[in-house]
Length: 84
Image (tube, rainbow, N blue to C red; front, side):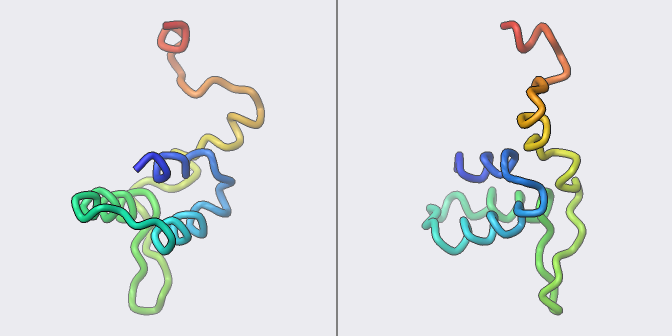
């Protein structure tokens, strides 16, 4: 499951590709299937009949932190949280 969370640190234009590779190569337990489906629906976008992906509920640029890490920015907007 941690691999799914790591998608936040992948370059934005490669997130869908990385998700598809994880889905194809990693054997997730059956109990994880609802979580994977939720993640795909909410953050990636599920493929439709034309093999195009629907718009996710939250776009990749909203939750991806790749550029923030590159720029040395904090991963939270709460300075006290980062201090603790």
